[in-house]
Structure formats: structure tokens, C-alpha cells
Amino acid sequence: MTARPDDHVRPLLGAFVLGHLEPADVTAVRAHLEGCAACRVEAAELAAVAGLLPMADPERLGTPAEPPRAMLDQVLTRIERERGVLGRARRRSVAVRVGAVAAVLALVAVVGQVALGPPEPSGGEVVALTAARPGVLGEAVLHEDPTSTWVEITTSGLSSGETYAVWFEEAGTGDRSPLGTFVGVEGDLYISLYSTLPREHVASIGVSTPDGSTVMEGRVPVPVV
Amino acid sequence: MGAARFDLDERGIRVAYSAHAGEMFGFAVRSLNDHGLAEEAVQETFVRAWRFGDRFDPQLGSLRGWLFAILRHVVIDMARARAIWPEPASDETIEGSIDGAVSAEDRLEQALLAWQIEEALRRIGEDHRRVVLETYFRRRPYAEVASELGIPEGTVKSRVYYALRALRLALEEMGWDDRSS
Image (cartoon, rainbow over all chains, first blue to last red; front, top):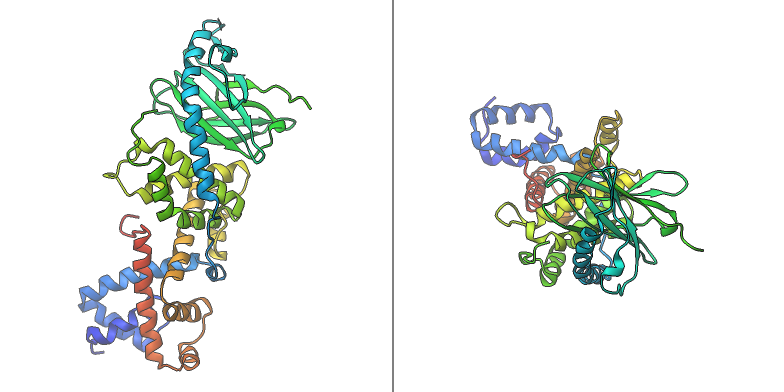
């Protein structure tokens, strides 16, 4: 079989990598590829794309999902709200250290000392986090929105670089509902995380290592109905 | 929390949102199969991007790649919390996932690739998309497709070639790189 010039073979490479060519054309293309490095590279590049096609669902090609128009405003509102609580959280973390002298059997009980800080315009329930590691301090403030339950955690003394998971324990089932993960840093750390779990279903707030060992946990008061 | 946030202040977030939110939302919907959850995931991603903006180093990678890395974490957390998984695209990927050894990260990687190839198919020209749909997904003979489109069979073949090239370019624009995987 005589090798075909590039101009004749290249347009066949798509059908070739998809396995759509007749045997005679397959033989001709293979013969050409043996002697043409440029076409071999191109065939390999197209084959990589062809290899992804089985993952696609042609039924989904119709209308791409468009983000809701209000989404940017919601992002900016959350940033604005977090910016507002950042300053208060820093002040509270100082209060946490002041209040943490009450250590019991290597467990550090951090009690609500929010009265030491400034008034809390946005409200929220302060939840003392009991740490299972010496030197770890933490406090959570639980908030409730119409669409979500969110928690601010201020903490210090966690290992730098270690990943931690934050969760709610669900009332009744005892299941852990993850809110997200964060990486420990030197010094004070402030995080806020959201969950769609209704406030009344939250029995406790906890922080654990990836293997599930609890680092801090605080029971959440039963809401008054 | 450092005060310096690179340029991901509120204005930076607006710019990043305008450039990437549509793509991120498409991926989140594809992964979580729920518009409400997808919206929550993208919102959370931009809030985290603002919060940790000082950790973004443009010398290490693109903003888009960084945002998608955050989004993947958020989607995995949400999928785990709700015991849902990124939806596989086809029977073949379902078979590959059914042995139980596939991690959430692997499933998400598959969902990302599936979404990227679907997005690439949306981006290429209608003529190119049509021949791929007819010959590959609907498994129709080239002669039949050629007759229906009123073009020679050789033109269908060359369109398939140009379609795959266009798909590759679209995928590369989205950050896909087969040489690094």
C-alpha cells in the first residue's frame, strides 16, 4: 500500500481515532503514520479527545445552566457580613484566652465570656467548645438564617498545616453533618461555615481531625419553642 | 487573617465572578445535579476565595484553577454531607465506579471531565457538533449523515477531523491538559 500524502490522510484522522474508517482506509492511514511523525502526533492528540467522548452525555448539551442573577449579590452580602463579624471575632478571641484559665483534667473548658466583649449586633448563640487537646482554645457562635444555619468559630492552638473538619451533630440520629474543612495556622483562626441543617436539628458543634478524632466539641442548647 | 488579600477584595471578587461564575455553576450543577445546591456551592467558593485571597499566588497557577480547586473541595463536602455523588455521565463510567473503591475525589474528577467535554461540545460550531453527535453518539453511518446534510461523505469525515481539533482547543482553553495527566 502506498503511503498517502498528509493532505489526504489528515482529514481522515478524526474518523480513524473514532474507529469509524473502513479497513482499507485504516491500513492506508496506519501506513502513512509509520512514516510521518507530525501526523502521529496529531493522531495521538485527537485520540486523547476521542477518549473523553464516552464521558459526555449528549442529552445535557441543550441549555447550559446559568447562575441565578441574584447570586453575585448574595456572595457580596455574605462577604460584607463576614467582614463585619471579623473585627468582633478578633476581639472575642482575646476574651477566649482570658476565660480559659479554668482547665479541668487537661480538658480546657471555654465558657461564654461574650459579656467581656462589645455588644453583638448580629446576635447568635455562643457555644463553649471543650477541647480534647491541651493548649487548644475555641468558641463558636451559632446563627440562624431563614435558609441556613451558620457558625463562626474562633480558635487557637491547633496544629499548623493540619486539616480539620467542622460538623454539626444532628439531634436524634447522632449523625455528623459536615460543614467543611480548614487548615490550621499559627495563632488565632477565624472561620465561618454554612449548613442547610435547620438550627433545631443541631445538637452539637464539633471539630475533628481527618481520622474522625474530636478536637473540640460543644453542646448546643435545645432551642426554646 | 492577613489584611492583604492580593486583589481579591470586593472588586476582585466581582471581576472573578464575572469571568468564571458561569463555568463554575455549570460544573457544580453537573456534579451535584441540583441547582439549589450548586448555587450554594458557588457562593461558598467565592466567599472562601475572598476569605483566603491572600493565599492565592498567580505565579503558581491561574485564578480559574484556584477557584475550581476550592469549588471541588466544597462540592465534595456537600456531596458527602448529603450522601450524594457526582452523577456519572454514561453507562461506561457507572461500571467503572461501581466497585466501591472509587473515592469522592475520583468521582468528582470524572464529573469535571464529563462537564468539560460537554461544555467543549457546546462551544464548537454547530456544523462540527452535528457530525460528532450523528456519527459518534448516534452511531449513524457516514453515508447516511452525508446524504441528510447534502454533502459528500468525504466532507463528513473531514468535518469530524476538524470537530475533534476544535474540541481539543476548547478543552485546552478550559485548562484540560492530557500531557500532565
